[in-house]
Length: 242
Image (cartoon, rainbow, N blue to C red):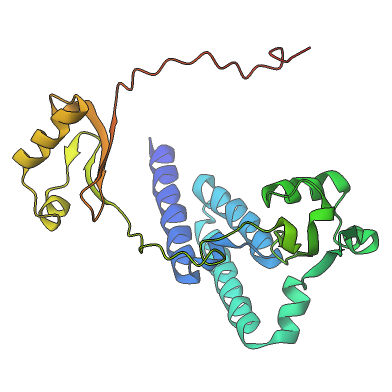
């Protein structure tokens, strides 16, 4: 029983320590992992796992190691922000991999990317061929930034001199069958108003609804638990035209 209690206490300690360190390091550490953050992330997990399950009375040693790695990560991140030369050493630099529709093979090889991995990055940028691109830059976080040729760019409303109204984020008023009364009041609606409006969508009880939003024009989006969808789409490999 004592062993289980030690594991429980150490697991809580490891969990909340990592949570606290991640919160201090900021959101960028989570959204864009650099090389040193990736390495430290693996080390964090290893030390935390050992801390959670260690039964040899070395909890404080692992805890100090976890804190030290957090401090080192924070110091490196601060130095990276202040020193461009240090940032180039730690994080690397963007690499030009496409120019005038031509793949720069040597630069792609220097980034340790093969052509299949490169094609995945192209498709993620809605490009089917390097020929569509003027410049393709492989960023230090592994993402590909593309600058398409003029004849391949998507036409915008600004190109057509058309002015559109500013869109706002719809307000959530029902989540998981529960009414968010605070948001409902912001839209100057009552629970009775909501129920009456939901009747137009075939909703009899609020428990039938999974998600409801309303925009600035009063237009509602309603998603019920039972959508009654019927589909014959088959995504299996065997469903191909011959």
